[in-house]
Amino acid sequence: MIDVWVNGQQRKVPREATVEDVVRLVTGADCLDGIAVARAEEVVPAGAWSRTCVTTGDRLEILGAVAGG
Amino acid sequence: MSDDLVIAGRTFRSRLILGTGGASDDALLERTLRASGTELTTVAMRRVDGSRAGTLSGLMREAGVSLLPNTAGCRTARDALLTARLARESLGTPWVKLEVVADDDTLLPDAPELLRAASLLVDDGFTVLAYTNDDPALALRLQRLGCAAVMPLGSPIGTGLGILNPHNIRLIASTLHVPVILDAGVGTASDAALAMELGCDGVLLASAVNRAQDPELMATAMAHAVTAGRAAFRAGRIPRRDRALASSPHQGRPEFSPPTSLIDSGARA
Image (cartoon, rainbow over all chains, first blue to last red; front, top):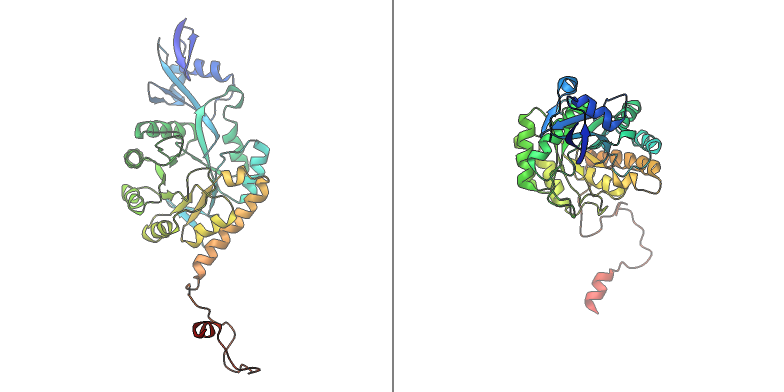
């Protein structure tokens, strides 16, 4: 397992986990529409989630639209 | 004759943009959006809560309303750019309501960061609707940077204080050639009507409706107010006068008693 930061919280995820794995872990959702991910202040396009592995110390922000503005 | 609002080449029949901020209940929000007649609504980008991931965007699609993501909460141009990019990725729209505020207490725009952010976002291909102060010079700078619409505040977000500087709002609306949308501070329907009478092309509001005792009814009121204010603006109001101007003709008035003037009598006393 490795430590990563997801939405401001430290979490342990399997070594070789992908961004998609982490998104599913955090959201618990089958449908990932309407979600966007930033890693190290760069957007990770949804099409690249399944082939982008996270590494120790990565900081991910996983966002979606909420009522506001 | 059609009188549609056009922003960045896109036509809107409604000049009211209703934000989702302050809405507590999805079903009520959907009814409120429908009652308002809006075709565009704002959303904020926040860390996902697993149980609600992606639900809001689906609800809006069902209501037939397009999403306008915002950068609410951003203090810097860098944060605004990343938030806008995440919104574009998440929602598939290059449209963004750009907000860069100075502090959480006033939520007033931070002008230098706002200009920097507007420049970065326009260069990155965004259609930028910029929330700004009621400052004509700043509004012109945002237009010059390529913003698709400029959105001056009536008063600080969520205050419901109405339009505190109508002179500046009128000046901005009459000077810019991109749409000017009054954004923030609307408390009730007359504020929205006034914005339109001052020449604004549209009104964006959220709290006034979503935090009203009856949001659905207030949404209807706002739709009427925006329509009425727009019609009044186009119709052209009469000039203000210091003294009365009789609407009935002087000619042919009967003389039942000698004519007197209270003002003349007062001057003699």
